[in-house]
Structures are given as C-alpha cells and as structure tokens.
Image (cartoon, rainbow, N blue to C red; front, side, top):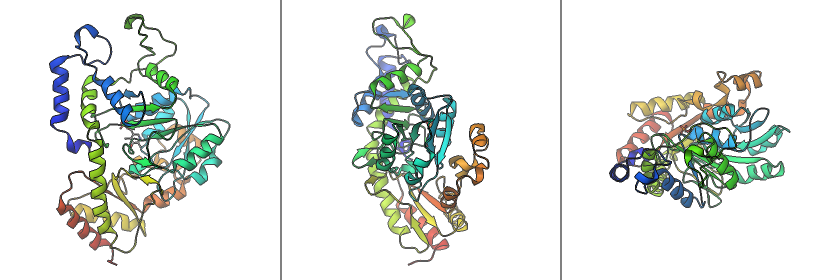
Length: 387
Ligand SMILES: *Cc1c(COP(=O)(O)O)cnc(C)c1O
C-alpha cells in the first residue's frame, strides 16, 4: 500500500516549485500569472505516456473516476452495469450515483470476476462490465473482453488496486475500453485523494473532461467564462497541489511495484512451508502489483485465528478477513438499489462468501523490515502445521 511510504523530498520539491513559480492552485485559467505552471495537466500527460496513451483525465478520487467515466459513456437510468461481488463498495456506489443499476457477478478462486458466470448476467439492459483487479491481482481480462465484444458492451477496468500490474504484457487499465485509477492514501501511488481515467475513445474522454468540470468544454477560442457546453456536469476537478504530488509519485511507481514483488516473494516462501493453506489463483499471464499475499485456509475459523496471531506479533492482515463487510456486496443492504434487486442479498453470492470467509491477506510493504519475516513465520507456526 505503499505510495505513502515513499512520500518525501521529491513530492515536497514539486509542491515547492508550484508555490515558488505560480501559486495558482486551480488547474484552469489565470494564464497570465501562472508562469506556465500546470501541474495537473503535466501529471495527466505523464500518466498517459506511462500507460501508452496520449491523454488522460485526473479527478478528485477513484470513486469519482468510475462515476465520471460511466456518465461520459452515456450510461444511466434503466441501464445495467455488471461488476464483481468482491470489490470496495465504491464501484457499486459509482454505478448507483450515475443512475444505473448494479448487477453483481460472483468471483472465482482468483477472487476476481468469474468469467464463466458473466454471460448469464447479461440482459438487453446491460451496457458496461467493470472487472476489478482486487488486491492487485489481474482479472481474467481475455475471457471478460471476449464476452464483452460478443455482446458489444463497454469494459471499464477498476484499476484502483492494479496500478502497475499487467495482463498479457499490457498494463492493467489499458486492456478494456476505459481504465479508472485511485490515488487515495492507501493506494500504490497517492495524491492524498485523487483518481485518473484513461480511455481508448478520445470522444469519451472529452465528454468525461466536460462532465467533471460542470460541462466546460474548455473551448480554446473562448475565455472560460464564455465557454461552450453541451452536457451537464459536476465538479470533480483535481487541484494543482494534488497534481504536484502525483508527478513525483508517478516517478516512483516502478520502484514501488518492484519492491512489493520482491517482498511478496520473500513472504510467500515462508507461507509455502505450511500445510492447510492454498494460494489465491493468479491468472497465467497476470503480473500482480503484489499489494498483498492472499491465501485460503481450510476453515473460516483458521483465517480469524491467523489474524489474531498476526496482531499478537504487532502485524495485521489487509481487508481479509477483518474488513469483508466493506468489500463484499452480500453485506451492502444499506445500498437500496442492491437491496431491492436481490431478494436476500446476504445469500445471493454463496460461492464468493465461501471463498472470502476463508481468505487471509497479508499486506506487503515497500520498506519491509527483515524482522517482519520472522514475525510472520511465528504467526504461521501458531496456526498451521509445518510441512
Ligand atoms: C480505493 C478503491 C476505489 C475508490 O477509490 P477512492 O480514490 O478511495 O475513491 C474504487 N475501487 C476499488 C476497488 C478501490 O480499492
């Protein structure tokens, strides 16, 4: 989770540069007095380039990125959007906020969307599929895209957790029609709060730009106060402070992912020495961000016991098993649109629930202390038998 672990001088220098040279904290306008400093725009262009695009749109959060993209795709009332049962509830909130109906697909042993169940959920109302690369493991994008193409549906990858991971050699977020990213404080790179959208269709991205900015088309021929507009919108604009931090964090993305992979491998070699555990499936051509190491225990009790043993060591687990209720759709009966769609929400996704209840996620850090390995080993010894 680790962008925040590396916040330091580079981020401060970017902010200092903003304050030294410009002091304009708004991304638009003030051209005569900002000295050519446009941090959000620079961040967008650098991000786009890293991911092989010409353009990108920065927004206020990953949740906003999802909503803005759904709106820009013209999806709303009466439309259905399919996502997966295991995700942060923001994915479903964004669908609901856009006015569409969320439809939930169960997960398989990769803990991501089960492509074998996806097609049965498609109806004439379905407009978009949102697979999520949960905890940094790539979703089975090949199978999901094949189904989507057959039914002419848009695919948006919720890449909040997948920034820097790959599938079939391509960056997560660039396989589908749209990629949405989060830079909240717990994500791979962070701007405190923030998000990004990339899209294959520049027209869609342009509509997203307008929507996130009250409909402003930023027509270069007009001053902003006389700007043209052709759709309604809202305000999801990123500030220049966030853009500054983002520029510095993006330069650290590769370092972060490499360090996580190395540390994940070390932890995996310890966990592998024990009986009664099975690792989460990672698709064959998938390259994780290695944000966590996830394994299944034989019973839900064992998962809870392991968390307790980790806490005793002064360590913790990550989401699984302790925060299932924020990440499993079967528990979200407070979301009316879900509650009314499913007769008995808590029993609607039995396969997902069974898998999640016996899952454990060990968080991976960039700056891992070697001591942590001994502590994890001690926690494992307490709960599982050695091989
Ligand atoms: C973090 C997260 C989001 C939301 O991002 P915010 O920037 O916190 O709004 C959306 N989807 C998933 C899967 C996430 O983990």
